[in-house]
Amino acid sequence: MKYIIILGDGMAEEAIPSLDGKSPMQVANTPYMDLLALKGRSGMLATVPEGFAPGSEIANMSLLGYDVRTDFEGRGSLEAASIGVAIQPGEMAMRCNLICIQDGLIKNHSAGHISNEEAAELVHFLEAELGNELVKFHVGISYRHLLVMKGGSKKIYCTPPHDVPGTPFKDVTIKALVPEAQATADALNQLILRSQELLANHPVNLKRIAAGKDPANSIWPWSPGYKPAMKTLMEQYPTIKTGSVISAVDLIKGIGIYAGLESIEVEGATGLYTTNYEGKAQAAIDELRKKDFVFLHLEASDEAGHEGDVALKIKTIEYLDRRIVGPIYEEVKTWDEPVTIAILPDHPTYCRTKTHVNEPVPFLIYRPGVEPDAVKVYDEFAARKGAYGLLKDDEFIKAVLAK
Image (cartoon, rainbow, N blue to C red; front, side):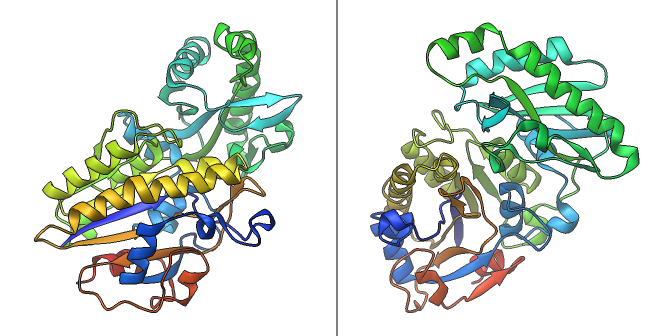
């Protein structure tokens, strides 16, 4: 048996009045996911343990069976693994967004989805101007970058920028949780202010403004942590001997690397609805031929949710079905060795609030020969009647890997 998890980031939603009280998943034309729900079994999964915010880092680690209470060490250290930055003892790593601030408010978390090339120029500039023996900036992808601080304390409260669009940035700056972390909080807040001074008139931003695009006029560090001590999936689940992760997002790549998976690069993978769907589907098929387990991640639905774009979210779900699930299913159903296919989001991302929500997500698990349950379509409401019921912690990954 081989196994593939196909994850549509942020795909789940609430009922939307403009869709006659249906969700984007219900409205979207998804014949392949519906077919797999009909032939497989469905359920709901609580991906975010009590006490945690519904971030992709928590949800994705959790659905892979990790106990985030002990294994999670911040997004920064995970993303560092993806871009080849080794976190040393005594160093703290943080995700560092390039964001757009307008009239003192956080306009968006992505600087208008700034291009890789523009972002790299700005991050190299910030490293030259603000980097020193204690602080280093490392280039990631688009708006997602890395800040590493020697001697920094992770006992600080940081607000994810995608959670607070429209909020005055000064209301959500970094706060110390304990007195000994005050110096770290002060240093990071000073970096935010200095970045705003430096980026305001940078040629990249002046060109973006002239073109009617949002400038990347501030950094936003968040999700601090040290180097994690995660066991690999192979150590935890002997059924998995080899595996791969396929994603355009550094966070997911980093989780995969710490989980013992090989990160597979796909040309044209962007994390947006313009991503190379066909390339990612083919890469997943190629990896399944060679390995036992593939974790295939698509970011586009989450970004549509953060933009509050209902029509785009429907389109991304349909793209996932037609351009990812369809080609993979049509290929692997012809193989002699059976393939288990699991599909789910990591968390809901509501278009109404433009942010992540801590609610259980729908999943389906299909394997050849399984006795199906009564669920006939795949969406947030139908899956509640599935045979698996409500799962949590490592119950989902164990259900995927069950014989």
